[in-house]
Image 1 (cartoon, one colour):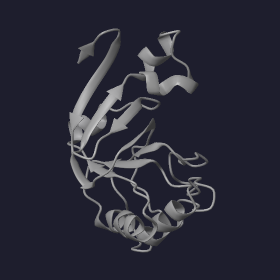
Image 2 (tube, helix red, strand yellow; image 1 turned 90 degrees about the horizontal axis):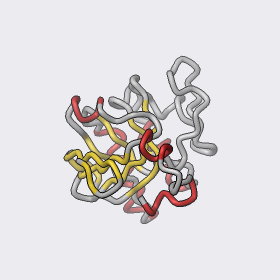
Image 3 (spheres, one colour; image 1 turned 135 degrees about the vertical axis):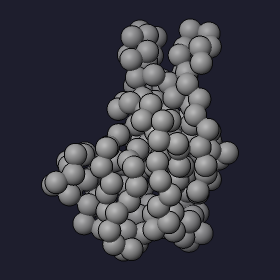
Image 4 (cartoon, rainbow, N blue to C red; image 1 turned 90 degrees about the vertical axis):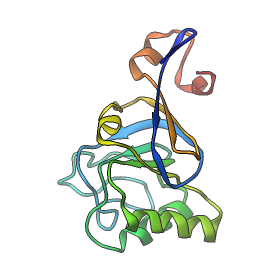
Length: 163
């Protein structure tokens, strides 16, 4: 969708854990287990076989197909939420009840929400690394194009909110 001088796309997803978040997309094509895959103290992807190995996901919108592996992933996500090293939101193409449970329990215990949204595969695939995303509690994901953001000299990393 074009609006004014900015380029936006709006995707409608299913809010598994409703909430509001905004930030840069960190996109992976691979499922991930937070247990052994993400350091809850630093927010770093530590699974050395993962395509995002070494990436810090703290405050990012982490876009990956689904979780995998251990049910302990929910505890690791909860710990990262408590430590404030969690992603700002999680966007998947398939429902992951284990990660959703971690986000739900963290919201109840710590009053800190990390939204979890599921998109259709087509919409999921349309998110690019570095896109600026705004996630709404209704499951709406507004994408502000990475390319447009950097080609517009009035925008910088410090004034993302003006987009």
